[in-house]
Image (tube, rainbow, N blue to C red; front, side, top):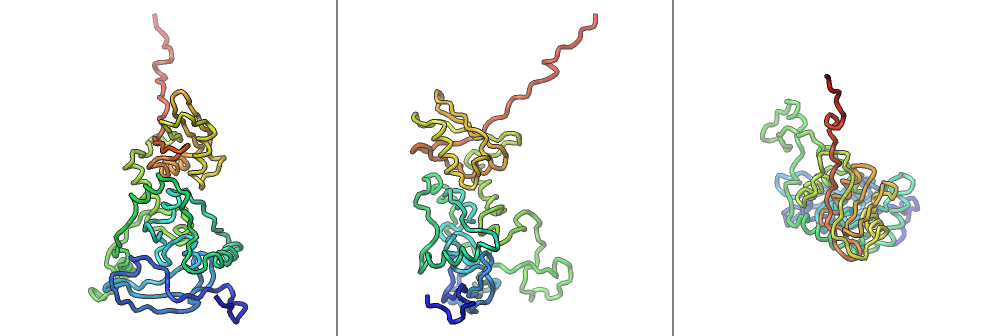
Length: 320
């Protein structure tokens, strides 16, 4: 890329065509797309970039790019919906399955500097996503969850705010949907959480349903924070199990792991976490198993301790 004449625009991005998924492009093979250089600032790195705007089809709303191409290449996501280009899933689902560490900074001071450095490394059509060392269990999980067919329903117009208030007078001519909104956790989404893969309600719903389908439904007892690993290799040790656990959960800090109890005679182990939320994260990542010492190990939730009946254990006074 030749240097820009204006030194103040040295970090700004110019592009000829956006990086989009099939769903955002729409089913119309003939698309009219407008282009505006430096039309807005990127939703993640805040650098000005080239904005593209188009209508994906009849009855659909106009769509536009919300992040720059450098940020899209770093995460291998669509510039509009921020879903993974290969699997069509939120980044939190993909990163959890492939045990990928989020290296992109979130502070205002570092994110523009990081984007400029990554732009030089990602010249052309390169992607910043390295999934070559991912475990076989994680790849199998993504194959089961992958969305291969486009979901054009996502391009529908937004809900008419005047209809919600009961004041819309356009009737059938209104370009917006006349439906009442559903207020749940899926209605509260933002670009930063979707891109960086943190607290994404859509990803949480997908991983919860997949874990339940694999027999890892979270127990009702919230005090249970342990995961049971069975049929370990004969050469496994407590250190090898602990190392495999931390490598498969890069988003979990080592101090959040309370203990690893390895029973060599039974070839099993109990992985105890300090928080219930951390244990649920491990259950999501290990829905298809976890690789330990070259073998895929099945994971299950631990069981709670049986409560002792106090009335039965306490001796009662006998009246004579």
